[in-house]
Image 1 (spheres, rainbow, N blue to C red):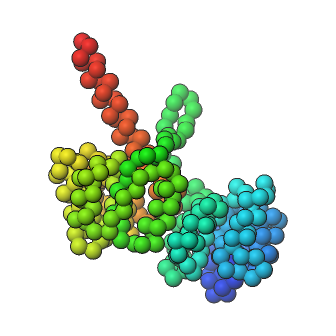
Image 2 (image 1 turned 45 degrees about the vertical axis):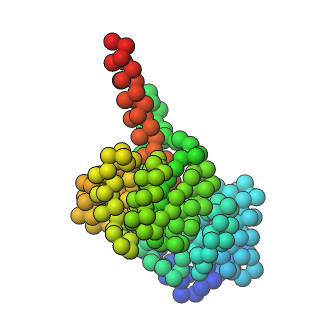
Image 3 (image 1 turned 120 degrees about the vertical axis):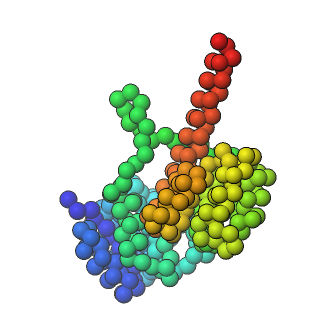
Length: 284
């Protein structure tokens, strides 16, 4: 059965484009151009996902989210906000209301929207899992007090990720310049580095190369996050020692946090394993 997507958007052009694109991609898509109508449609349709504008007639997006969170029938429905604004205060507010992802209309790309929808609906995804006996579950660890160096010159993305990581209790060090980023990593010795590839000055590949050539920091895991998605770029980053290569258009904010969590957990487990082996050697 096709998944149901509700679009709550009063921009005629954008609403029609999203409706057409979702239907052509095999979804049952519905469009409401008014906030109050959209909230009522959420109750009657019980959609699998909602694409929500913030500025709407009757009820705005914030009011819809607040009402959704108070309604047991609606509170579990995932929401992606598509907004004109990328202001930190707006990002902070919608994240506090449980939004799963956030897109800016000025950077609107229908294909990217479809990719985000599929990710939220767990379609065409291989969830990392760990097996324990006959049960399968995801490894979840706390990021509280973990140090993360984030190297990214996209101000919007940096703001929204900073809010997410702050909610996790992380100690975040944000750098936009490659040379400064390397100095910060050497000084702080973080648990993980998140590294964009396209930067002003030296690029992410050069930063990664220098980090992995430095005995002091080479064991710190690095995740690359980039708009680049060509195989040669992915192979180059992994060949230089990156743990993961994430493509911005195909990952959600929650997935970025999950990937950070998994890599830190893997490294912690590996360190514990080495410690156990060393202790066994000493006892023999």
